[in-house]
Amino acid sequence: MKTLIKPLLVAFVFVLINFNAAQAETTTPISKPKSAVAYQSGIYTTADGKVQIALDKQTGGMVEIRLTNAAGKVLFTQQVGKNQTAARVRLDVSALPDGTYQLEVTNGVDTTHHALTLATPEPSKPSRQVALN
Image (cartoon, helix red, strand yellow):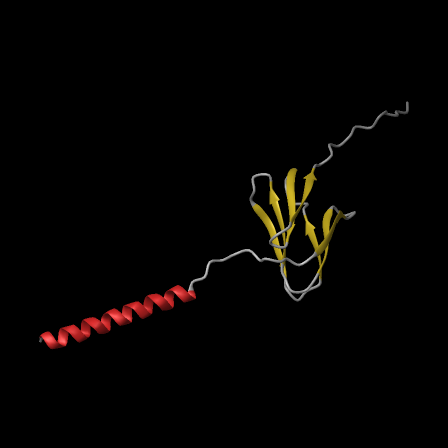
């Protein structure tokens, strides 16, 4: 019985050591990219009250477009893939309440922030009234 326990114990220790070594090799910490792709973005409003985003970038990296409200809640996000060189996005903000929003364009290293303010104009009264007798 003694002769059987010692080899089993040694075999168990070797299996345990190999399992831990295999686990250590497969788990790598997530890090930010060391170099990011260059991009250019243009943001403007349309006559319909929508926000148009034009993005041109290099291939080889991803760029993310994100719209957040004043509380920091993400309302919209879109990733432009590694192989894409251009993206055109139109956001319909007519359903959003009045307030201040942040539009962020990031490649993982550099982030461009754009402030977006939504305000509904109050209806104005006519400046004068004309009546006929």
